[in-house]
Length: 118
Image (cartoon, rainbow, N blue to C red; front, top):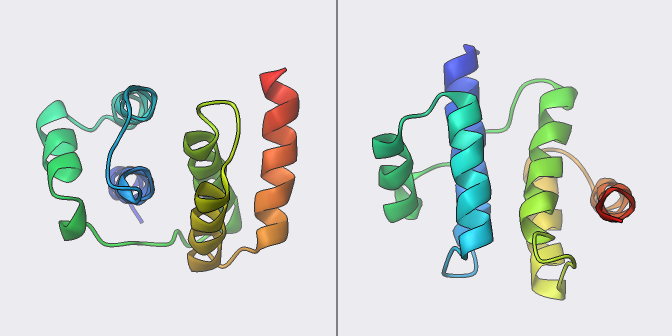
């Protein structure tokens, strides 16, 4: 998979998770915009994705490292306010499962994230 396609797919996956609760708060939007800039995705494409989340489709990366990176980013979005609520946790587990990962992987990333946030 070409890096640009991977980056766009990664961004779409994160956007779909951020939008899953029906809205994107300012911190989530800022994180997504930072990711888009890091990935080289132009603002017009970002707005198109964020304004039409149902048009995006989920694409799991081919290698485990990329899957773990996407899950880490997803957990970060869920914990952006400093904690992870049950609904957010359940979404992360579903996201992990779609990536071929488990709830244990989510728990490990949450534990690591909490340590890094301190």
